[in-house]
Image (cartoon, rainbow, N blue to C red):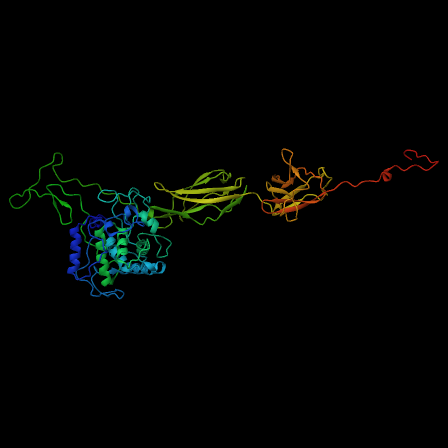
Length: 586
């Protein structure tokens, strides 16, 4: 990895002289010069090209302005002007593109042409960026699925010679939980990949180290902001959104022009790695010279006779002036062992009736940085809300560790007695935890039937109360429905569409007439005995409608009528016949 980094050059490090040399080399090779949009002055200021940055990632670039290769195209270019749709079959490895890498670029071009035809993305632009960013995935070192044989990681963006970008992914993609690093053959920083990552090979994962996924992500990123890449100015803006350096733009443009003239396919793994200058060190101190790679070289010691350099002055303690080697940099945690993401493992809608157990259980799946299931990840599940719902065992918080398939399933939920909504939150990972939140609902107890428990006539005289009480029973699936809310309303029609403002009524706490009650609930046996009902002075037949939570209803008839008058003669005692005396008990 160190050798890889030493061959890379950060944004802005290439001088105007290097850029001029690039153009000169292209001219000498008779390759078409990369035409820049008007305003690209080559002064190192990307704003001179008028690029927009609305779609850019940290520090305004998809790569975080990470180092890049500055190698120029070969001096001998393909003699194939115009389109390179029919590629030469042979040529140098340096000029060729590994088969899987080339296939990924062309697939991305076709996909974007379908979803965003106005962008007119050319695969040669992806090839140019892939060449500058990773040397075509290190010369095509990929497996059969297009995934690099080892992760391609840029240096830590720790502000020491590079941009300062603190960790945004918990090390999920780059194995670094302190600072971000550019990742994969197209060198996305994790925060940008989180927004633009794609699954182009259909394996269910968005892997920045897979060339098919990375190439499509780069294509969509370049097409952002409604760019038309057939327009020079839009193409320049797109490239500058990838790395905000005009020298970077010139280098990509030179390879883009080269690939437009023609290239050829080579076997995977046979491409050549770039040999660009290494990342420059800070300005050399007086007394040092600069080596060919731009790094300071130690000042030679005075020579002894015979041309051999004399040893420098000794240093007390170790007898040497040579700098002590730095301790080795810890290797990043392999992606296969790095927690990457937390996802829903198929949890369905969370709904239950008050007091009942939820049919669904909350289940999540942990994946590593490559998208594969990850075992032994602790997941904390927490219930939040005021419905009284708890996990089995009466706990609001439980911890479960993922199994071999990466899944963790919380205990069953027991609904509380209060209807309403609540949430279940799953949290996993340290440093930058991943969180999933599930919405859940507790519905009121329900009944699918309600009926009177007797058939006694309900009759009252005007101004009197009904002698017989109204008693009903609610059931759900033929079982007693306890705790079910019931609404009682005096209505004018059997369907209960119109309330009645005359006839029988209930009394509220202040003794005032009311014709609707909404605070009624069935008891443990599903039975409800209504409060007393009173009649006003209007005779007639009236209707009382009872409706339960769940939609069950019953309509009960109430009659208000004056008692029948009786004839006094019919009720007078019969007089005994003359001469006959009734004897009590006779």
